[in-house]
Length: 95
Image 1 (cartoon, rainbow, N blue to C red):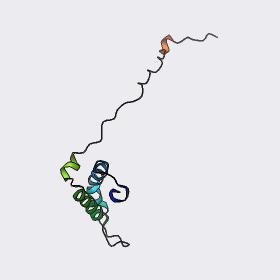
Image 2: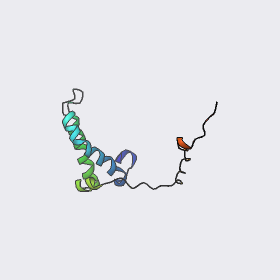
Image 3: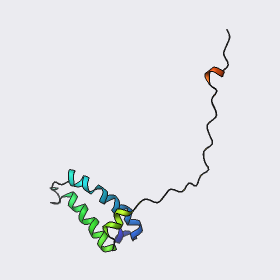
């Protein structure tokens, strides 16, 4: 992504942070050797993340400290729902 698409470090940090958060799960569940590639998936992902961090000059601490930006509300607040009449005040039908 970085070399093919020209992504900057700011755009790659969220992806690397997400992959790093998944690493314990990958270590637990995907540590067998893939017969097609003769590699372990968990090690391939770890190597990829470390390689990208090195090439971008990013530390593991910076990846761990990353948090998604706060969401900015751009739409108007929703109107309150119409007030419902309690059952005791509801009109009754007379037959």
